[in-house]
Amino acid sequence: MNPYWLEDEPIPRVEPRHAGTVDVAVVGAGITGIAAALRLAEGGKRVRVHDGRAVSEGASGRNGGFALRGGASRYDVARETYGAERARDLWHWTERALDRMADLAGDAMRRNGSFRLAADAEERDEIRVEFDAFRADGIEAEWVDDLPGHLAGRFEGGIVHPHDAALQPARWVRRLAALAADAGVEIREHDHVDDVATLDADQVLVATDGYGHGLVPELADTIWPTRGQVIVSEPLDRVLYDKPHYARQGFDYWQQLPDRRVLLGGFRDVSILDELTDVEEMTPAIQDSLESFLGELIGETPHISHRWAGIFGLTQDMLPLVGRVPGRESLWVAGGYSGHGNVLGFACGELVADAILGDTPSPQLELFDPARFV
Ligand SMILES: Cc1cc2nc3c(=O)[nH]c(=O)nc-3n(C[C@H](O)[C@H](O)[C@H](O)COP(=O)(O)OP(=O)(O)OC[C@H]3O[C@@H](n4cnc5c(N)ncnc54)[C@H](O)[C@@H]3O)c2cc1C
Image (tube, rainbow, N blue to C red):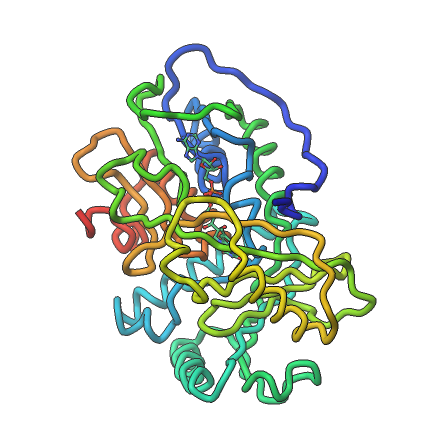
């Protein structure tokens, strides 16, 4: 198991230490925990982050690197489920988060857009409805019928989202962690937390997404740990994909990296129930499916250099949980991005930090309120 992203050079950072009780302890040093810690420190709080691993070694350093606006559901479905106004607000809110990420990420982010493809006629009809909903609500998107040669015949058109991005997610979160440390955040790596009650802090934020299952027993049945698997090829001699591509309801996703390797993840639906687990290991059924599809995508037998698995948190309504844990005065949560946490994790880390800082309620806090499940 060798996550490609984590092989990147570490980013040096200062190492502040706080004596005694801090204002806020954060469990989890992925995108959520680090974004929250930075925002809290900028708001004047003394913050300590604890992680059983090192910064970005959970899903934040093991994902597909897609930085997509919006929620995990299709836009038209979101609109039907919680109303056009809330859906539009959510999409615009994540667009603003992407803009802030672009300001901070430097060379960890490439703003090339993303390409949502239809794998067959049925999916084409579905995403056409989504596209019409984007148009109706003034959300920028482009419909594409004429696919380039290597996609033509295999896919049935698609939607380009022009402002989405590709991340080197480990570099991005490590860079943000360096900014958080500069702002005074203490980051304790390799510091597993068994019980949040033992943390020396006035308030605690649990930012563990699919990991740390059971740390907040009230939410154990609400955020389901789910496994995703990824492979990466040796560099190709040509560029086939200039932006992140995804199809089959997002079950398959791939992008070509700056060194011309192709990263492919997904095929969770090959054994969907087995993948509802927090066991971070690869399985032959999914690895074989990935390898064979990668061969089709690149038109030759793939030579695989990297493979790994990671865990994300899935929720029943595909919306995150962000806010105070019901019935617990000083315990907060942000997680459950349903496989869509690169932008949502950043935005929700900031959102929960603002709530802890006492800012006024927002439409997103209302939509993501953990109390909806309890
Ligand atoms: C294979 C895969 C592909 C994905 N692809 C994409 C994608 O392309 N685009 C996208 O938007 N999203 C994607 N996701 C989802 C996205 O990666 C996550 O939603 C996001 O990274 C969550 O960030 P986080 O900071 O909340 O959690 P994580 O990054 O998972 O961090 C949680 C941290 O908590 C720590 N932790 C857990 N329990 C404890 C404990 N008891 N004590 C101390 N520390 C603890 C863990 O060590 C971990 O570092 C993917 C996920 C996977 C697994």
